[in-house]
Image 1 (cartoon, rainbow, N blue to C red):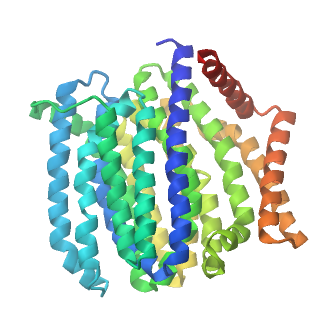
Image 2: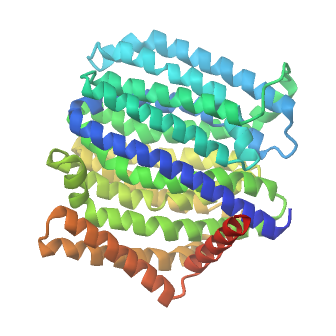
Image 3: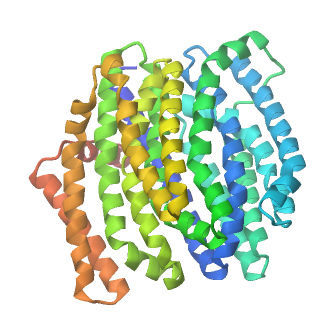
Amino acid sequence: MDNDNLRQKTFSGFLWRFAERCGAQGVSFIVSLVLARLLAPEVYGTIALVMVFMVILQVFVDSGMGNALIQKKDADDTDFSTVFYFNLVVCIVLYCIMFAAAPLIAKFYKDDSLTAVIRVLSLTLVISGVKNVQQAYVARNLLFKRFFFSTLGGTVGAAVLGITLAYQGFGVWSLVAQHIFNTMIDTIILWITVKWRPRREFSMERLKGLFSYGWKLLASALLDTVYNNIRQLIIGLMYSSANLAFYNKGRQVPELIITNVNTSIDSVLFPVLSEQQEDKGMVKGMTRRAIKTSTYIIAPLMMGLAATAPVVIRLLITEKWLPCVPFLRIFCFTFMLYPIHTANLNAMKAMGRSDIFLKLEIIKKVIGVILLLSTMWFGVMAMAYSLLVSCLLSLLINAWPNRKLLGYGYFEQLKDIFSNIMLAVLMGVAVKQIELLGFADFLTLCLQVVSGIVIYLAFSVFLKMDSFEYLWKNAKLVLFRIFRKR
């Protein structure tokens, strides 16, 4: 595949993945607003405790072997079928463990109602195991249009079900039903739209080869997920469920934005870099482009959200959720850096260096745990700030190996993102001042959004920002093809 075709296919894949993430997360966000008005913060705190365990166990389904299939250049049906059966068995075992452990978890948190919730919600593990290899097949072949239909179908159906049950007074069970239904419909549609089917083949030799690469990524993802969720477990244990609800709600909105962009980049960049893994110059160029472009998109969104936070919260989920504003701002600054982590780590994975990937995760998590243990006694806010500090340190750690692997070190990366960050900060400061005018919240937010967009784009054109010109050029090419086909 020549460079032009590769660039076009990559950009098209990103657009489909981004559209899928925006559609799904947009619907989920609207539903969360409705449910936040219907349900008490304590209900969200209860489901958050259970979801911590689900998210951690989901790593066994989503990481490791699926990435190994994408990275392996000559993966065939035997490889895919082997991983399918292996994953399915693992998911069934995980469900049995959660079913047996549910009463112990409920006892630990002194809430007997958690037992049934855990046992029912754990069914998502088995359902996810059925679709994992289908997802790897889609990513490997850059067929991201399939994700768009499956994810959106599951999300919309789950939205209707969750809101209906909440209105009828089912409380936490409305959230449980929403999660299960979403995963189930997503899986069914993906199986209908993706033609790959497992064969009656299983190779232990192939499994060992894939596992030798995949287990390091699995261990890395497990470390990262446990670390990212351990704060919620500690908050639930040491503080109130309301504190946990405010912490999670503050994380939800910026995470919604970062998930759309970062997942889109992650899903497309890894298979594309894997295809070019033998050309270090190409890998460096694509990694650099990913860092510059993703920062250009994410930085203004995060800075804008931090600036408008109180107005957004009052408008969307009422004043009872205002205590989540400080957490929201901390997460905005933290998540703004995530695409840089993603691009650096994907370059290592694509070049087969899962060993370095694992070492970095261990170093980062040791530092993060030290920071967490040092701050957990001083309140939930101190714990949130420790995550921001850990993220800044992780930025340096993740960039270190690519200094030698790709010749793309700290200072070059800083140079690539500096103008994007500074422009986003300028825009955020300007947008914040509009709040001082004293208008009604809706009018204030409208003025903030419009002025933020105008300021950012106007300065991008005036300063001839490289990322703006890149996005504009590729957007015109995509639109040209669409209209030409019509």
